[in-house]
Image (cartoon, rainbow, N blue to C red):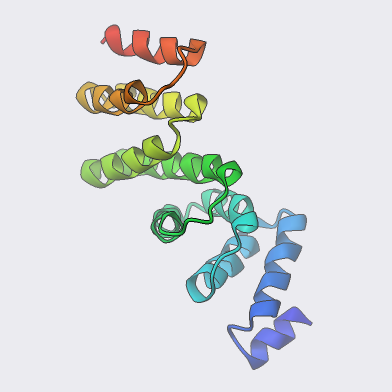
Length: 169
């Protein structure tokens, strides 16, 4: 029924959300990404759908869409704290891919956005630092590390590992 509705009206909101939710429940990530992209490009995106959208976009390797989506969603104040790790993790993977493509400037900008989102999520933040260290981008990693030094981040084990890893380079 949802597909029939989309044949009549290509951007029908209830049909798009119905298919998005259906494919999310069935873990059909190719279809989920397709309808998720259509939804967010045409309508305000429900924050509760962010985890499924990011997961599907990573699965289908639509990293540029994750980056585009992050710019859209970060401009909105209603993104719930519980969804920030999903966005930060998606951006981290997108930045890693951009580095593999030797697109260093864009990758650095994307990873910085991920780092800013993940200052309270040290596991994601430490992954960003590890990616930068693997790519021999120690100065960038050190600059990002200052993001959590300037915050009132507790001196957790994750924090100490990041600090010592950077000191070792």
